[in-house]
Length: 446
Ligand SMILES: Cc1ncc(COP(=O)(O)O)c(C=O)c1O
Ligand SMILES: N[C@@H](CCCC[NH3+])C(=O)O
Image 1 (cartoon, rainbow, N blue to C red):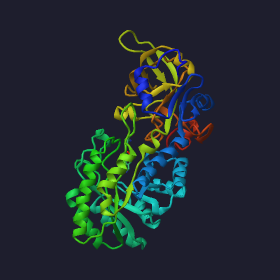
Image 2: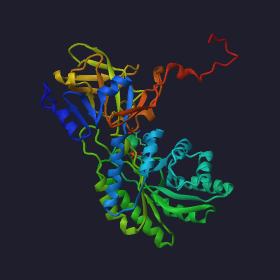
Image 3: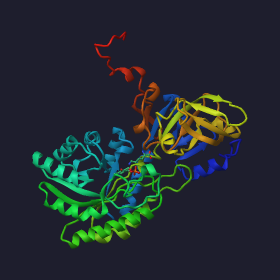
Image 4: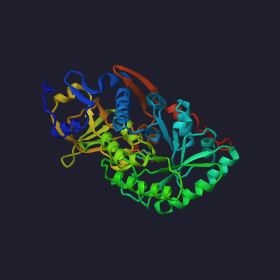
């Protein structure tokens, strides 16, 4: 880095401090782990999602190890909604992960990658009858029931199928996770879970209902949570509940602690698995429970990024920084448009780092003023044709893509050291319309 002609702006330096897997090499440009993004961008073009399997594997190992170090037996159910690509599930399954699913589609994907049914838990506030039936038929390890109504429905379905459904009750602890309001789930005003006050009554009912095997409780208070304080509050609420249920003679063997562990997008510290493990040891271990967690973002978010290319640099006069219009857009990565989310952005080529820094607006080409990636971002000057990387896009990135503006879905690439492979080819325009039909009674020229 010392031989870069222009020193890095302090903002870029503080971003790099919280992102140890990202380095800028004077000769090779941007490196993601050991992967040269210059080589990847030139080989696969843009926009392209990149998943670095080495980073993903080492994050999984670190999380797993944090619990082992505390002699805690914690089942890790990967929240596959964050990124349910089969290659990712396959890698995590080999590491020993189970899956947290939220639909029948996710159940089928998890089973396809040989995640044992016993390691699957099914969350979700509105499960269809077909989805519940499939979950009972395949004997998944745990269905997280989110209402009294669902409990009764599930009992009927399980009787019809002739099998037992192992359940946890998802409880809404009315705890503020102190995160973005669109991704908080543990407040009484949120739709998720059974109201704390009703928990014991519904748990007792679960014991009376045929074909239901109550295991215990589940709590998930939201996503992108960086402090352990809300977890402590939620866990303490659950401890009271578990003690109350046991005092009344009801067995509680399992507590699913949910997911939500935050990552560093800008320069905020990410959730620390060692702190979470210490908290679980202190507050939950004395109850002698089978513990589970459902992390998504923490595992896959920093393991992925989006490569894009500068299409045009627009000078709109003295009152605004130049607009850098790139070939990725909100249809690819919707997080900035949907949550005003901040994602790190850096140029890929080493030459870009020879240029002076300046403030830039970075936008996608979609016809929406909200199609924004960054405002007043200080970066080495960007020029048409430059490739850039948009970081921390492995979670809730490709899975939330759409084809708005008839923009085909981007390619997905997985890397391992210097190896790379396409795991989802770039969609074509023909792919987009191949299943569209025009009614035969409508005059058409297609
Ligand atoms: C029930 C449940 N479990 C797990 C997760 C995963 O959350 P995260 O990706 O923040 O770990 C979510 C998403 O918020 C969720 O709704
Ligand atoms: N989609 C959200 C996270 C939702 C978590 C799922 N309950 C995000 O991109 O941050």
